[in-house]
Image (cartoon, rainbow, N blue to C red; front, side, top):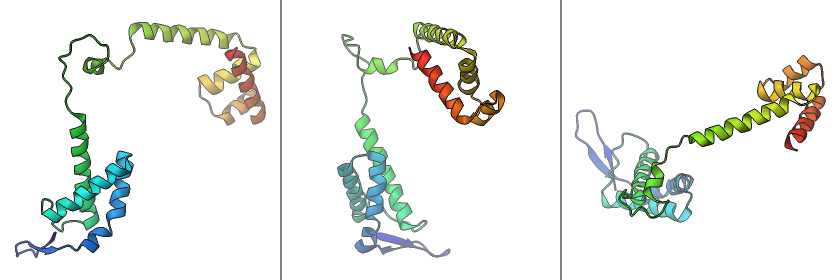
Length: 178
């Protein structure tokens, strides 16, 4: 392991980085990898790979940043390599017998026309039910839920307390759910 030290006119000279100095960054690197991978054993393996790359000379610290920043950068590249390796390449040439598989991944994320029609129908039904509520409940639902007015604004507009607003919302929801 080497550290680059250079003066503006002199070429880069690499000084060794001690294992003790690298070891001080191990827990931070493992924690970083665990947050990204959600797999403690895999995180440990990747940190080991980073130290192995530094020890073998495949990764050389140039001294242009803090050692930990550089180590995190190397670790990020290892994580990206792992994700790419595990992603693989699925073939689009299938026998077509199953509905699952690579072709299913090409499905449009937008809802289908029948799903849009169903959603519109449910919305119209819900709006009709809201309109049929008693005035005291309908006003609260329209102002607070449909228009997204703040609690304070609704209470002020209807001249009711905050507690009364919550009671009315609860009653309205209960009627709409039945």
